[in-house]
Amino acid sequence: MIAEASQDEQELWRSFFTMRRQLELTLERRLQADVGISTADYEILSALNHDPSRRLRAGHIGDLIGWEKSRVSHQITRMEQRDLVKREECGDDARGVWVALTSEGARAVLNAERDRRAAVREHFFDVLDEHEKRVLTAISHKVLDSIRPPVCDEVSSPA
Image (cartoon, rainbow, N blue to C red):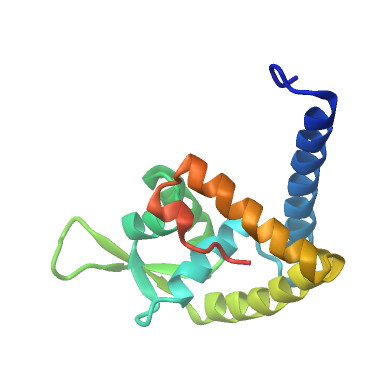
């Protein structure tokens, strides 16, 4: 499994990996069931919603959420078909387009943010005591310091 890891370390890694993946799946399923959007939709909608103009260039969205340009473009096409976002011409750059939040997208992201906060509270914060939260915060910072993620990955992800 993990080279030169003790049994305890292997168990730590397996349990951490499983917990992280199952938490992501639980949040994804709940978002799908309660709001009808995917985590990928949510990440883009959230980036747009947090911009004062409610519109961004696709490349900037990719930078904010740590995605490749082609992935952003494909996701935006799917979201456009569901009226969550729309493309608008960029007046100062004939080759560029803005991705703008639609009223349907705004409703979806507001519902999603409420739902996501409740789900994170239920499945993460509420199962940890205050000491465990402090320890996990310290561990998270220590690991992040050792891998030095790109700036886009350091931006707080949507909960």
